[in-house]
Length: 250
Image (tube, rainbow, N blue to C red; front, side, top):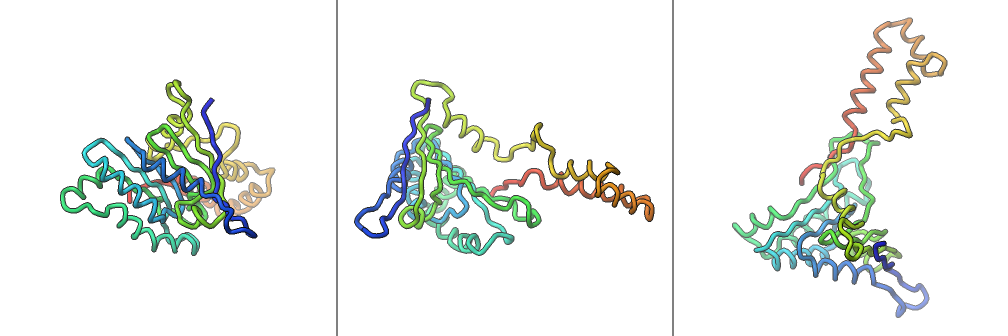
């Protein structure tokens, strides 16, 4: 079994001397000791402290194989809280590359991959990343409620689990998780065999004259024989374009 430790961000309302910053300390130590890779998924990605820590590792590992993958969201359909993050993210990126210039900057950018959800997807379809995941060297993962922001690390009430690979076990939990979330970048869509997709369910209902949707489509067909065929084709076309939400390079 993997080793797990629970950490927190907490502030005692009636006693400001009682506080817990163990999530922050865990993230700081994990990034500071990264030797091969850093992967972060987060909806905000605006902590300048974390950007500075990653920058330090990029400088330390600049002549060694090292990879940083950052997955976030950034689109104009997002709410006001994400709009704020978009404005702050430029500062995060500047801090990430601080101290690198010229050919050295070009070289370090080959080690950093910033990915965002495709902003062209219409509203209502998978516009959010809500995971808060830190994976270091495919050996340690921090998964919980804390965003990559100073507020989550110092002010809000948060909980996270630090998960270590099983000692002496090949292909442990963290390594499997890293393979799933880092390596594919764009996962092929695979339907759940136990549940119908909503588009399949809708088309089945339209084709079944015993349902209200099927009866409505049948009446439409009496007025225009091509209309039911066109509706089914449009539903299929749109749903195929929206499965899955695509991740692209930033």
